[in-house]
Image (cartoon, rainbow over all chains, first blue to last red; front, side, top):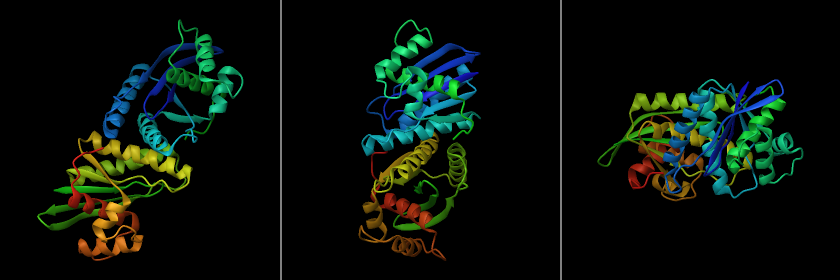
Length: 159
Length: 159
């Protein structure tokens, strides 16, 4: 089963694709979508949609996993993140993929073993689990962790 | 100039198209997009995108106007609204349309004359300005008011 994990952000959107065969994980691809910092919202949304569509075409995942949106940040960046997230969910669903959602706690537990892990620990564990040659960048690591989380839990109800 | 006003909501998304020729407004179409209340988020986003795309194809507007997102509501519904809004902006921008944003204050001033008007007053004034046979439903009236606001102000910088 091939899973695309996505970490949509108000600025950077991380993504990571893994494959699970039995108890074995294979790393397929990861990366970060970085719209220009000063680009208008509409250009950002189109850019994220196009990049993500290309990743989906190239890697043909069977499901998408996302982190629940994080409530603790300031409202402006929360709104921007949610707007990007809407387009991310649309891009996947429009291609017929089910989208599943996990809490940060579930995702960290899945890769680090406990829910209050630091970003760096997530990067280190994702590198180890997927036998990567180097640490993935933070947002791509979160996306890969989300994909690993879905591979382990396989929730039944898509959003 | 033909303008599509949109009022994206966590549940209902209102839309309204007007045309401005000189100082004269012509009403083209209005309506509300109402995804099923219990439909999953991904289905809601696809439904809003498809309905809105059909409206754009049918009415061929030259610009889109939106209200700034409203901060005062609870975070859950704010996030849902922002996710819908992201897809709404994407749907318009992807068709090459510029998207402009106005504050609730600017929109109410444009149709009622002062910024703290009630929803009902907006409906009544929109009906009068556009010579409609009956009151438009609240979310469609807000969308028409937003289109009227853009017709009057014609901001230069799209989002």
